[in-house]
Image (cartoon, rainbow, N blue to C red):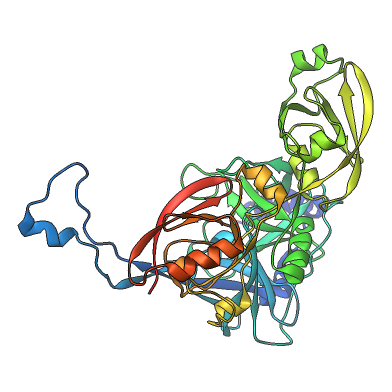
Length: 461
């Protein structure tokens, strides 16, 4: 028996020495320190139940026609959840926009079981970030770290509530940096951090932090075929979050740089034909007439190799660099033109009109300043007219969540171009049409969202 015990001890020894050899980190102190600043977010969204609709193209007998007439239906509550974390002791917290989008009530719960109602300070759809606030002081918080020095292979830890399992921790390494993942709108303004940390539904909005306990990213997406983690998770870099938070606090929206170009990837054949030694850069395939790129002297056929000293290795790198540049900034752009490198000084435009700016006043039920539809509108600038190819309209700056416009799905950042049967070119015309709008009657409203026209109906109560 003593011989067997001796053999088991010998077999076990290499495993202990192997762990010591590779100096694997102990995550316990980090998790204990960070967990108090992480929150579980529960949201409630009121959804109107829809009545029966007549089958398209079919005649309904009179005896059944009343079943398909519009009528007020009771609302039902939809519940959702996610994660978030405090970024300051005075109650500011960060999460994903998709966690709280369209929510009528937002509750945050700490690990010590305290709960608070949160209001929306601002949201940014393009980065999928939302800035919230609770009315409390001396709260635990996490620091956002600049991620320029983040390295592939570095250990990172996530805390969140996957599948509702509160304050779960998982660890892994950074798999890649600067991943380009276009949205369903084909927008690409976030250079994602890819990790193999186990992230699942419910982790969205939670922190990804390094071994120093500082946040390097906000967990946002996973790639999966099963609905669960397969080791491909993506986080918004904290550098992006720092910029978004700063702008949302200052002005309630996020302004991004804009060039007005259509770009494509450079493959080996294109690189050879343009005189490049290897495939790199972003090829300008088209550009908007009168846009910032054309006004600054860029040309169709230019291959952008550097933008403001940042090397453009692939076409996906350019939107990241341009979007992070403040509007009206003049930057040097290195291009390959006619087989020769050339530097063009480009004044960056402003990509505006589609950032949904949340309002703390609106979420508190204070609708002062909104009109009869529950809107605050303003005139649009010429850059947005050119970008969306519209002659005029009014930009929705604020929406009362209890107003008629909110019931119709109108959101901040939309541009209203028609109300009733009247075209809207300016705030003055909008106000004139609004005065004549009939009460308790459905009227059409046409608006642009992300450059796409949409018709809805709206009822002035």
